[in-house]
Image 1 (cartoon, rainbow, N blue to C red):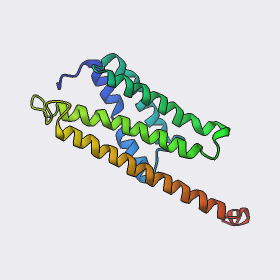
Image 2: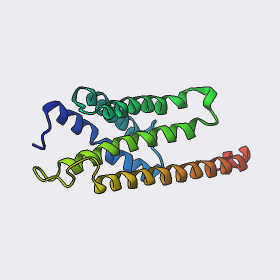
Image 3: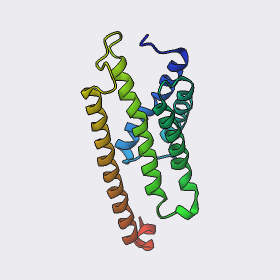
Image 4: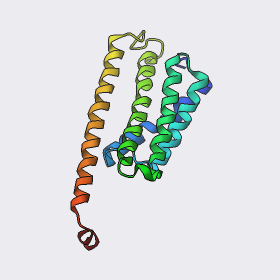
Length: 171
């Protein structure tokens, strides 16, 4: 079905939970939160999906996306544990993990449009205006989303700086 191998289905089905989890965390927290239950499931779903892309990839860009996803995933989940990045850690964590969501959605949109409906896909080739438009919209969402996330984090940091320790203990 859809011309997907058994390993391709493992790749697809293991990656799928990351999509609603990312949407949930973006809606609830404004970012992917690595040290939460959804964040842990997101990590493993993304990791399995990124690793399984290597034996099924047909284009060199797939290897680049898989490698970048793994590197950004480990960087995003590890940066909070490095004390030298204390001040910038949450910003880097947010950027890295938002990029993993983008790298998940880019091939998801491409594969969906080039395979569905089965036998008569919406897009016939990778240079289709529909596909390029969808990828462009995804890129705009990334830029706007990252900008909103950074602004939100800066506001949180400013509010925390103005809150005195006495006020915090009284709450």
